[in-house]
Image 1 (tube, rainbow, N blue to C red):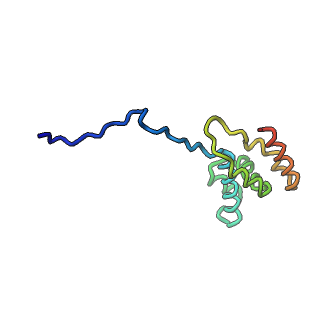
Image 2 (cartoon, one colour; image 1 turned 180 degrees about the vertical axis):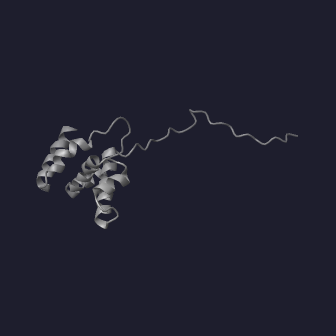
Image 3 (cartoon, rainbow, N blue to C red; image 1 turned 45 degrees about the vertical axis):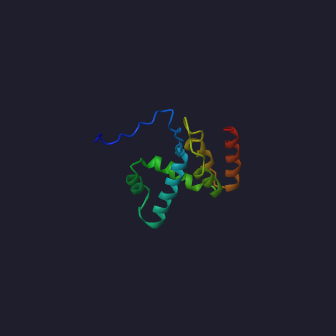
Length: 123
């Protein structure tokens, strides 16, 4: 009589279905979400000023300004950045640095034109 516990057969690599990679959220999407959150913190008084916010976020004040400037983008540009598709390989095509000229533009209509131009460059 065999008293040993039955052992499970280890699945061979060929037996396992391939794992579906989810990819990663683009860095610019994460920065856009951070900009929105930091802007809310300032508006609610959770941080008194950008100096305190930079300390809380453990970033330099100039870097905080760069991140916060994303919150000045037209709402549909912000939404587009938040919902960029996940990246499966490589680096992001759109970087915060690419958006700096757009964030300096206060008119949302001109921002939209510059955004459209930027998107065409990456296609």
